[in-house]
Length: 236
Image 1: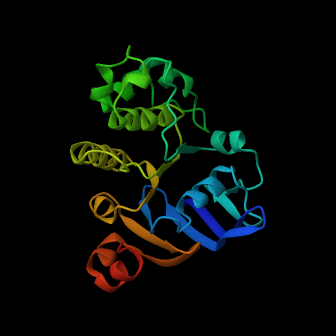
Image 2: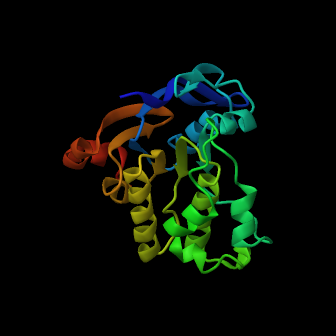
C-alpha cells in the first residue's frame, strides 16, 4: 500500500521551546489514522507542521511521495492536504453556500469530485441551511460545515483536529458516521483526538503521542485490546 503521508523525524520549535521531538508517522492511502494523546501531547503542532504553518526545523513531510516541507502553506494545500483546524474557523458573516464556494478548488491532479451537489448529498443537514449565515449555526453544524468546506478543495488527505471537541453526544455520533462514510469512499484521513472511544469506532489505525514524541503505533484492534497502553497514555 502506498503512503498518502509520511512525517519523518520532525523536530518543531515555538521560538526556543522544542515541542516535537523526532516525530515519525505514516498514513497509508485510504487509511483513517487516529493521532491520540492527552492535551498538550503535540497533536495540533504535528498538524500545523504537516500543513506548513509551523515548519519542522529538522525532518521532513512527504505527501504522496513528494517532499512538501519547506513550502508555504498555500502550496502545501494545493499539493493535496485539507486541514480542518480545532476551532473550525467558518466565515460567520457568510452563508453556508458562500463558505463552501470560498473553499472550492480542483485537486492536485485537476479532479473535482467534491462539488456543491456532492457535498449536499453527503451533508443533507447542511443542504437545508445553504442560505443561513454560518455564524448562526450550532457548534456541531459549524463543524460539519468546516469539514465540508475543506472537502470542496478536493484534498487527497484530510487532517481533522479534535472534530468531536465540545459537541453534544448526538452530534458526535453524526460526525463519526460522516467520517466513516468518508473512509469508505477511500479518503485518507489523519484524525487528532483526545476522545479515544470516538476513534475506536471510526479509525483503522492508531498512533499515540506523549510529550511531543510518538510512543505507540498499531492497528486500532490492537489498541482496543491493550488496556495497559490505554491506561498509561490515554487515561485522564
